[in-house]
Image (tube, rainbow, N blue to C red; front, side, top):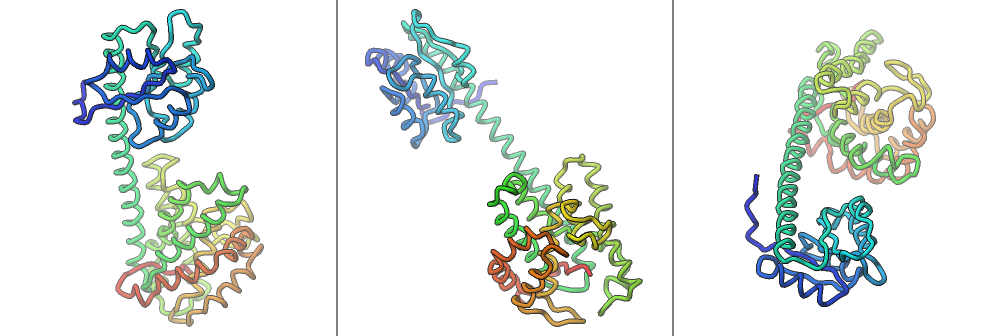
Length: 370
């Protein structure tokens, strides 16, 4: 299917050290396209990375200094220029390795001496293919954006369900997801975590953090809404919110597939009350057995609980809460996460102040699971 040609003429960059070749090719294409010229590889790279970028490059293979293969390799290494189609120019009597050129990402070869009709036809075909490919990419990008919005909406809806069942109000969810992101971004700078905490992972940590207490939907009102400390029996019932949370998310994940976006949320919901020393719940996991996402959430959740007012306790100052977090290094909390907290604790203080319960009093949100 042919796509309609754009209203602005396509830009073709011709790269050749021979003025005669530049003249012949430009005369073959002039009138249909905006022509750009370069007489060497360095100029070609500069023009290709400029604004606007060319839509197609005709690139001579044999040039002094940087040859066409070198230029093509550099073009394909750059995110800005890698998608520009390249057609190599070569003479009939030149020994060139067409397989090498195609392996570098070139689309075609044009042989000298040039036939104007053949040059126009091949250039038109490559530009048509590029328009089709660009259009397809736009469709894929839009579908990806819609999928991401669907995922975010799913997370928001599930988190809201838990929020409305909780007796407290405040900005616990907003604060904790920002704490988690701040910790992850700091730890991503460390060689040990740069692969685990890439940009996509940090994004899903931020989006999934609100589901850490989704299991509260299955906790009895008499326990969940009790205005005071829990008895031992009630505390055991409350601890079930981790298991119930994983069950809720696992059910949805089973429909979406084992590698769905809910995997991070499931790990957080199930394991955010585990302890580094193995004395947490529900499974008594120890050290690195606990998913990194849950180890991050644990520090964020406890810090926020310490800073928040409850019916049975006043809020702590940042300094007091930070002291407790630091004291839990290597026992309750992952030492690396605590070290990250120590390095960015001013960000925690700022987040707590920005999303204070007083400012968000009209917004029903979740609270720290006991």
